[in-house]
Image (tube, rainbow, N blue to C red; front, side):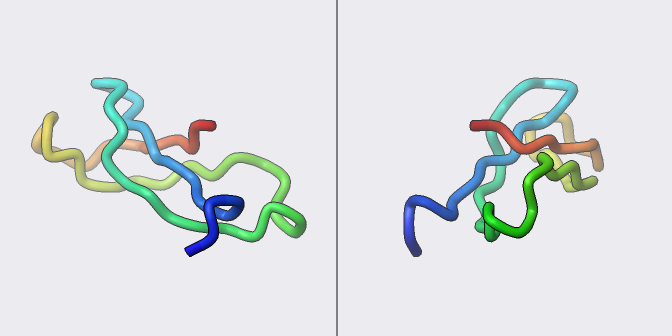
Length: 51
C-alpha cells in the first residue's frame, strides 16, 4: 500500500492507535469516524482518523 493513502484510527476514549486503513484523500476531504472494537478498552468505541 502507498503511504500517501494510509490513515490511522485512534480510540476516542483511551487515545491509542488501533487500526490502519486507506482512503482516497482527493475524493474524501473530511476525517472519518467509525465505531470499532478497542482491545484496550474491551468494547466498541468511536475511532477518529488521525494524521
